[in-house]
Length: 524
Image (cartoon, rainbow, N blue to C red):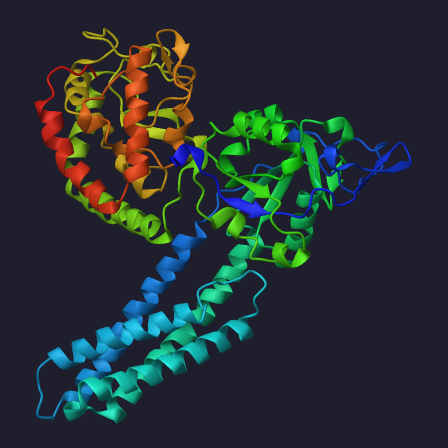
């Protein structure tokens, strides 16, 4: 089954379960074919306007946060055990550093494994600090016991129980302190809503009601709104979550780029409507889930609700990358981006001075472009066009011998030096070093919006845009003058997204400069 045919299933109750709606002070029992309308509200109230919905804030990737905290723990345990064991071996017959390093690697691995096995990295929003630290203590003591037993079995001739025990207890103490800090900071972020995935629901149904009720207890999701095509029959809200409009309103909502997951809550009894809902949203870059009717009791709804926003989604949204991938990619962006910016600081200042002397106007050109999830950000470039002819909306793409381009602009565009200020976009987290190139908001190709020419165009926004990418090293650089050009660019971008990993990013970066220098035909 292809990625475009798969979707994860989040199970929901029997659609035949009775539900009630209020209609002008009358109550009636809903039939299964009514798509499970939920217990309603007085229709004499006014339906909330979508424009009154606050735009959600950008969320942190909780999987990446977990991986980052695991990495910090591993480094801390590794350093503490290595130092402690090395100190213990001083004055013994074995003066080499091999034993301390081996002991530290084994110990850190066992400690982190036991912490993961003990579920010490879940960091649930409702988990109390005392409960979490108890989990850390139990997992740490278990790890210490396993480590000592393993060391005794592997190296009985050089086993130093006092040294290993002291080092292990020091490592456990460090983990205890670190996790006190983690829980305090993460609880603050949870209160601010930075860690709960933002979710909207399609369908004011019984399934939606039950998920919202359970989420009120766990607070693992930030459910901001419900959309339904049958507004005349839908309640005004479900337990405080407003039913604000139809799917068309969702697509036009300015907060959509900050939605982490769209959940279709219609039961299988409404198969035609469910298919219609999915067809309307499947081309969005947001991840999509839908519910199924496989189980009927509330206990199953009490599974970790964060699975709605963390479980792998295929369909149009593609499988999300692991927390390890996200964290490593961000770390790579920061390290390489910072080093590159430091090394190129003087040349960039020289280029900036030449631009200022060459023509009047600002040195840096800022242009609104689409980024991750269609979020708009200002991309930074060295200005290469005359100030009075800069095309911020990209309504006219660059042509050969374009009169708008300045003398120095022609050279720095040909060599792509104009793109180097985007290292700041990378360090700020708006872009990545490798990814689909960001296109200008409202960019036109052959007089039409580029996004209208290819159905899967929005798929390229499932990841952060990049300074270079798979498309660029495969000949798709520069302006797009036809629908075929757009189709090829999108095809290569989607191919990158499906195969992306950090090693491949390094390969693409290594190939970028040779490809760029050998390219004599691309118009920029």
